[in-house]
Length: 122
Image (cartoon, rainbow, N blue to C red; front, side, top):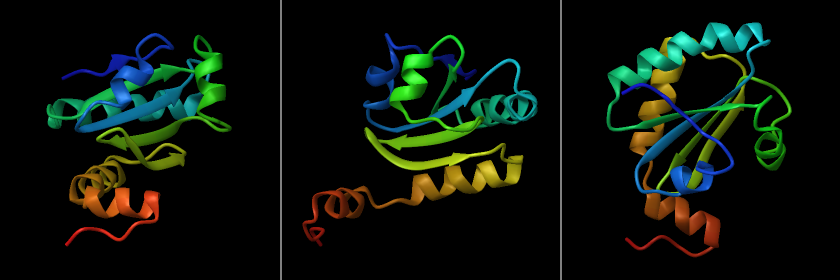
């Protein structure tokens, strides 16, 4: 599955759905962004069960500001509507695969419990 363009119109709907959503904040003038783009695209083809979204920070400045993007590229990972990872910088393919596996391995009951301050149901 190729990546999808995320805009102010579809961002929230996309990242709040169930499952994993990876978001690449990028700009055309950014060299590291251009270097990361094919890595992100290859991963999108390898993991069809994950939504891979791209936010053009030039076209979507208000969205980038709302997400507090200070450096690009920035990769964010959402799982079941919860932001579980955010890191600036282009990742090599192996590191992106590690992030994907870590997000898959998360115990979301535990994550939600940490966010709410409640103990996880076990």
